[in-house]
Amino acid sequence: MKKNNYLIYIVLLDVILYITACPRIISRTQWDGKPISIKMQLIQPAYYFIIHQSSSPICFNQTECSIQMRNIQNFHIHSNGLPDIAYNFCIGQDGNVYEGRGWDVQGGDMSSYNAYAINLCFIGTFDTTMPNFKSFLAAQELILCGISKGKVSSAYSLIAHRQISSSDTNCPGNALFSEVKRNLRFDYNPNQSNQFYF
Image (cartoon, rainbow, N blue to C red; front, top):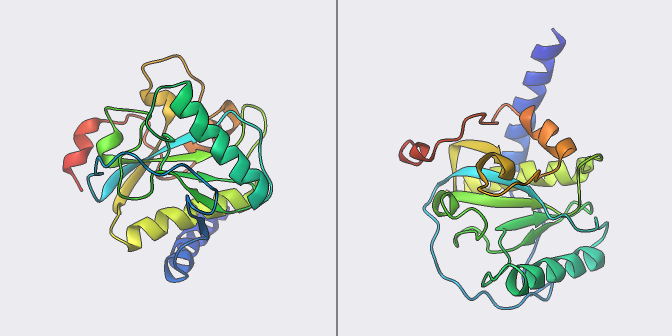
């Protein structure tokens, strides 16, 4: 009975969030990001949300999170050799969503999935601690926002960076990964051929 009540709550939450539109998205200009320098278009609607952690300090307000966004962008450009921040969006513990590459440009982390996936990063390191409720709520709002805009498939799945990485990584952290696996949309066996089933 409790399980059924939980599922009803999740469905109602989806409906409510769908109606209430998009979360607060801090633009690249607002966090003082470098101009976007790539134009590889994302295939839409996107099928996957790839969940990441930034492996950086967590942030609790727009000033702190903007600093972390600039640090992540600089690290990806100068250390990883990418033309921009790898993620499409990042989420801080302040409950704000921070625009990376946005809805329309391919992410830069998982090349074989970039064409039809949104890379979503929780700012922080989540091996032993969890993101807070505000950040999870922002993530859910962002997903439903994407669906309402036609940017994300209503049949989307959640996967974690570690599932599809060619390198040895524990991203998005053990604690966050455990939580992601509990989501009804989690895909235990991601398959790139799913791009044909939008």
